[in-house]
Image 1: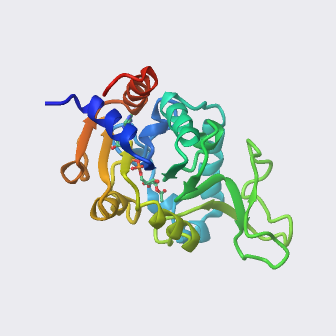
Image 2 (image 1 turned 180 degrees about the vertical axis):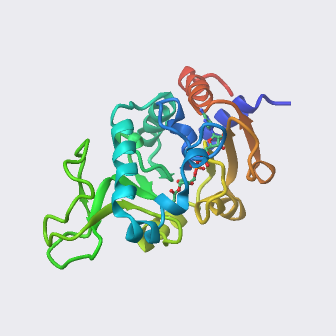
Length: 252
Ligand code: OAD
């Protein structure tokens, strides 16, 4: 039987349209905590108290303190080999789309092109009241924040992180671009537990549209049984090995 890494490299070589969905596991080697699993954020923190619009209404200070802590942590993190390889591919393959559930900005920091931020960005904010004078969203990379909760510079009300919280929908524009990316030759899902919808449904949808689907994860997930190829191991190692094969230009 063909080695899965070779098979993966061969499929990439044969593809012209490549789409990728990433999750927290891709940033794990950079030191950004994942959400689930033994060391996951949701072991120590409650999503209901920190990542819902209701939690923000109830206690904006608490929510902002948590985001301020995460922003501080992420600001010290650098892209790892998984980000770097995906960035390289985004430049090499003309029809490459990367959909990320991560809000950390590390794919952008690695120079990746054509990134769709499915769950927004921890480095952007918007006015909670959507006041008339404020832009739809804007970048704020202050670490640590000078005041918690921070105020809207346009109306003096509250601003909130431009991330998607539980119970909120995905931007129409983001959904449309992600749906377009499902029409591809190879769709890979990397470092995600594949439990949060609608992101978790993308790999199946791509499969139904005829894409060859690949999962890379440390362990089996709910997506493993449905993909064409499931590779278990650290994304930073596997993607690097595949890139080594591709760049050696050997017959894979
Ligand atoms: P999770 O924390 O749920 O899952 C991370 C996945 O990465 C797990 O399946 C791990 O096995 C895997 N993993 C960890 N380290 C890895 C490595 N080095 N290489 C490969 N795989 C590795 O994170 P997500 O699936 O991204 O949403 O979570 C999805 C969403 O749930 C997040 O975007 C966030 C969260 O609640 C919102 O906040 C709306």
